[in-house]
Length: 283
Ligand SMILES: [Zn+2]
Ligand SMILES: [Zn+2]
Image (cartoon, rainbow, N blue to C red):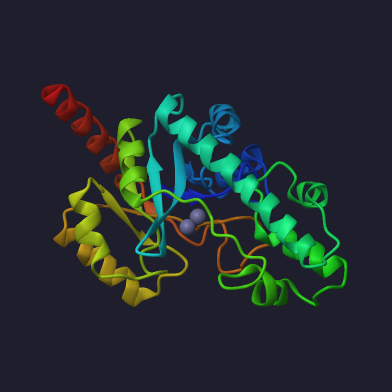
């Protein structure tokens, strides 16, 4: 029987709909051998996911998806097989989280100055335990009748160049790659087809990137072929996943939409051991 994996899943520890426990059980029910939980800028869903994966006998790969900016483009870097108690990684993610909520606070203040009746507590209430963001502000603006849709809130107020917009604090891809390598993880470029840039890959490879996400719901067959051959050219590992956030998000992204061969997971593990050996030799 073929063994397969999904190496890109979100939970309500970031902006996913379901708990880590639910996601692990759902993946088990679909027959996956291994999955990775890769929440945005946080490891906080991993302890629960690891516990459940032990209960249901599913291999759980500790992952993360770090948001970075390179030449004013948003680039996501996935990290796999992380040591989840690595303090520099944890501390940086906490710093990113607190700056995220400070930014939303400042945007709310800006909106109040512009005459909108909105306060930070309302935004917190809507965001719950997950990562707070602009969509939560947009929801309140819709609820209060200032705009008709979330999209309109973004177009009129919340996007770059708009009156209430404040840029987000982001780290560079280089910082993210370093943090992941330091935590004995494998840094992988997420969905390169979403924001394509032909100069990015050679640069990232140079600074320590180990892999590339070839299979992703936003990649059509052509994109898959392209990134498959680029992975070969640059001698990068290949990964893939559904980027599932739950049923309330984009319907193209569903659990089971991407199933990659389990051998690709084994390649990640081999690379991890090689990196550790390499590091021991150079230390
Ligand atoms: Zn992403
Ligand atoms: Zn994602």
